[in-house]
Length: 334
Image 1 (cartoon, helix red, strand yellow):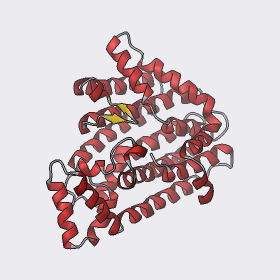
Image 2 (cartoon, helix red, strand yellow):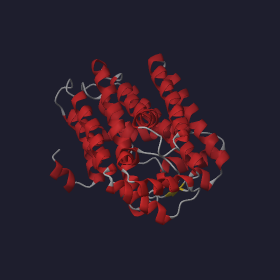
Image 3 (cartoon, helix red, strand yellow):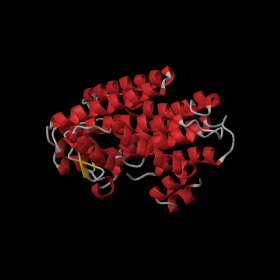
């Protein structure tokens, strides 16, 4: 998709086009998610219903279904795998919101704000365990091996995130290790398990595509924190900085900061609750030092590598959708 075409296409329309080849199966994924988390316990049913309203754009299940369709004969097990992948993603969001004490997610109250932090932690665990129980029902240890490994990496990613508080010491390598564990491994697994449901010979290519796409995805997400407004993202601009989270724009700006700017950044990380002015100043400092533009360039490099990973795939509407998913990741505004 050309740059001009991407600019003319709203993100929601772009995603709908990407989902076109698998839209009917994507509806089945939603029903499967409801089935997996169904419970006789009223509180679990209440929280699950709220979570499934928050499920978002179903981007990861879309990747699973597209990957399973590369050879044109998808295995029905792909529906369950796609549901499991999305439930694991939801579990990470529930835990993230609890750790960060977030009150909104996609314009809706978080589980921890609507219920309690205790309910949030337990519900995240419930989603993980039900997702893995559904995997056991599939009866294929390879799926279980891949996604259990992902669950472990996601936990490591959260621990890396908690340790990423030294704004002037956290390195680019540290950041890449973080976003690989936090984001890229799940997108890689979404594509790899999809490949095992109908396109096994492209398993390695699709797993690599998913990982590189995930790296670009998280960089784009972290740039949004510097460039977007709350009306667009549903959260305040600069939220990562408020929580003392170090992301690529700041890392890449850091070597180019004059003493006064560096001192202002240090002040932010030494302030327990930085105010809007301090956040605004650091955002401007990072932009002026070229951190945002350099982060864009790094995201583009990962995106280019993701597109190259698709080279072995046959030309088809599915491959085109996977290629367009790269543009969607780079161009989304929320």
